[in-house]
Structure formats: C-alpha cells, structure tokens
Image (cartoon, rainbow, N blue to C red; front, side, top):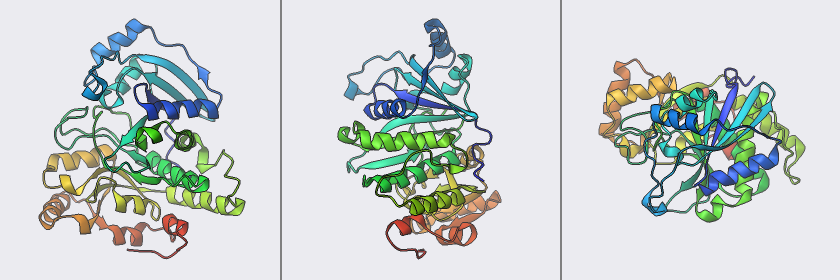
Amino acid sequence: MVNFMTKTKIITLMCCLPDLASVNIKDRLLELESWTKSELPPVEKMKEGLLKYPVTSSVLYTEDKGKELSNLFTEVYELKKGDILLRMISIDGRIIFQDYLDKRLEELGFGSDLIVFLSKHKSQSETKALTAHVSGNYTDADYGGLPYALPVPAPLAMKKLILVMDRLNNETGLGYDVTFEVTHHGPTELETPSLFVEIGSTEKEWVDQKPGVIVAKSVLSLADPDNVNTFDTDANTDTNESNERLAQESKLLENNTIAVAFGGGHYGDRQTVSLFRTRLAFGHMFPKYQLETITEELILKAFEKTGASIAFFDKKSMRGPDRRRITEILEKNNIPILNDKESVAEYGVGFNLREKENGNDEESD
C-alpha cells in the first residue's frame, strides 16, 4: 500500500510565467486532463497578501533586464482526481522568490498540503535532464529565500516523481537523465511540504513538448492511489513488463524511511541510485562541496524539517575531516548513519530498477 498521500488532499502546482519550461509543463497538464478554470481572487486581496507575506524579491535577474513583476496570480485551474484536488496557479513572478507562498495561499482560501513548483533546470553542461529537488540555502541567499534556511521537503512525493519520470523516459525512449538535485536556492520560508520538478537544461528542452508530457504525467501520478498508472504505456512496451515495473515502483514506495543525505555532487548520484533499490526516501541533501561550512544547527534543522530518522553518507565522496566532524555531530544527537552498502542491506528490496534498465539484475556497491 502506497501511503505517502494519505494526509494530502490538496496539491498546488505553481507555474512561473517567465519560465518557458514551467509554461510547457502547465500546457501539457491542461491537454492531458479536463481542468476547470476557477475565478481569481480579487487583485486587492492578492496585493494585501503580498504586503503581509512579502516575496524575497520582486525583480527578475539581470538576464531579464530587471523587469518588475507583480507576483500576482494570473490563472487558476482545478482538477479533482479521487479524493485529491489538484490546483494549478500561474504567477507573474519567479518561483525561487516565493517565500511565504503557503501563507498567501491560505489567506486567499487556497490552502494546500503539498506545493509542486514547475520549473526549468539550467546547467553549464547543457545535459538533457528531468530533475526533482528541495529548495533551501546552506549559506547566503543569492537566489531567493533567506540565508541558512530550509523549508519543509516532500521526500516521498519527490521519490515517486523520480520513479515515474524514469519509467516514462524509458518507455518513450526520450533518453534524458532522470535524477535528484541537492538542496539549493529559494524559497526557504515554507511550512507546507514542497519540491521542484524541472526540465533541463537549455531553451530547446524547456519548450520541447515530449519532456513536458513526461513531467506532466508524473505530476498527475501524485494523485493516483497505490501507484496506479492511468496513462497508456508506449506502444512498444510489453504489458507484462509494464505491470512488473509498476509493482516494483509500489514496493519501492512502501513503508519508506526518510533520510538526510551528505556527500556527492550536485546531482546526488548515490542518493538517486539508492532510490531505485531501497525503501529510503530523501529530504534535504548536503553536497560534498558544502560539508566544510554547514553548522550543527543547520544539520539538525534539516532533520527536523525533513522528519528524517537516519543520515545517509556518500562516504567515498566526503573528505575525511568533514566526515569525522559531521559523524561526531550526528552521534552526539543519536542519529544513525548508513552508507550506500549498509542502506541496501537494511532497506533493500531485492532488485535495482536502474540495473534492470541496463539489462543487469545484480546489485552493486
């Protein structure tokens, strides 16, 4: 039984109008289901909410020529799927600056149990990728949010998104990387669980409908009970193979233990691999290049916000001094530590979906 949505009744999907990938995902969502367009709140009431709960910044980056944005909602669509209401809101503002968004939503009668930010991903490597991550700042707040601040993540919803995006990516032969990203950028001031789901990494991918459809279907899957696949599989996909994959996804989502991760690069490679072979789900993730500076206070805040009970170490990637210092902090606070191999021994499900995709069912360390 997949139980991560039992307390989730309203999912808010945030579309950023200046973001091409965000608009692409929104448009694909509208094509896939029969949404109902809802009435916008009064402009004055939206402005009052922004005064009471202000965004971090109302100005776009210099690449957008410093254009002023209103940060007002421009469209609201709703879709009921079983017991869950999906509400998609378009906003004239950058989503990384939307601190206190959950408070503004409540003020406008749009309270939510989960917020999913639809976004583009940009990287120097220009790798084609579908990613999911939690926002938050380990140090300064150069890209939204407050310094040394972390929001409440949504580990199980994020895990399901990765699993479904990976399946659809394989079924369609799209050939994108499907991966976590570590905690980064704003917003940080959110008490409602939230996550980012993204298309990367250039304008060509941001506007491409194929990855847009995959992300849209994956987002809609958050409202499906027990991991039921409500979409037709690719014509070239064997039905038995597809059913087996769905059953394995359900097994990976059962009775998960939540972890905070330490080590690895920006894409949390070992955390991503672990997701496909264990009953672990990850909240905040600290990459190896931030371990030297993160404080005990921030580490404990990550566990508190995540609701995590264990720490996951990408041990090989961590510098000795960083590993020893963080280990001391965790042991002092009675937080168990597992490395990659130990996590498989304790939380493994007996298969690795990523290796099955490559034609190899054997486990790896």
